[in-house]
Image (cartoon, rainbow, N blue to C red; front, side):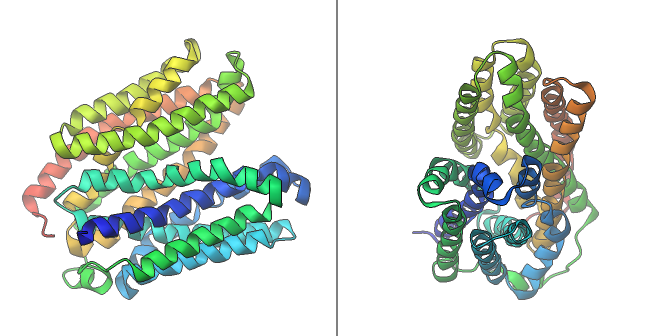
Length: 391
């Protein structure tokens, strides 16, 4: 098999372990509430604690990759995830759960930043949109696998088994990365062999692209975090609302892949962005006022279409020597959006007292990415003309 595709399979499987671990705590949260005598605010804090380390560590993580090698730092990240999962599984107090979650989140940050750069190294200038669509899909697939298995396992064998399962998944991913993945020639120090400064054009493009991806992920979290309340208000039961949103989540996984294939084979990035993002945003704005079932299904079918398009610009524009720091900057914006926008949506709901308010907020955010995308396309064209990519 071509080394590029082997790398994609290994890194995609490794990142799926991150989604699996992220969801593990939510899957056993009722058991943790009873075991530790904590409230759901504490559970929410633990769930969210997995992401904020990225705000502080995305850029330093990319620098570590340059200093010690991408593969080595990713391997360390997987070990940290395994340690964090094991610590949570053996926890007897809430502070130990916090420590385990934080350690796992630090490891996940190293994976997210550096593995995206590694995919870009292998696929820059060819099949990058398809590769990024496959790679990005790994996280929701991991989440879906956790939803299917960990709650049932915890009911049968106790809540620690869920965390120990994430340790096993992280260790299996470590074995794949350590013994199967072959480093790209641009790995680590090789990526710093040229000028290490990132250009202003690159900073501008990566910041805009990162803001789009941060808004996308923040709006995704708002949609699935606040839609259940709205759906219950429309007359659905809690179970029906959960089933409908679960269906939408798996449709998104499929639409991400379809969008990546369409974009890679036939192009049309603007059409995919308008259809996917525009349809998602308008669907959210319509959701509080119409029959929610078909709207949620349509959102699931459309939401994933532009993911490959959104993820492609950093790999297409960044030079090999600036790719590590550029991906660190990109993921800093991602973590800011992912960590900051859902609390803002909660504040808006508290302020208005309306279950629809966060959904309207998410819809406006999604539509705003179309303006950012137009600006990013313009800057990307200028960057490609001024600094042609060398793989």
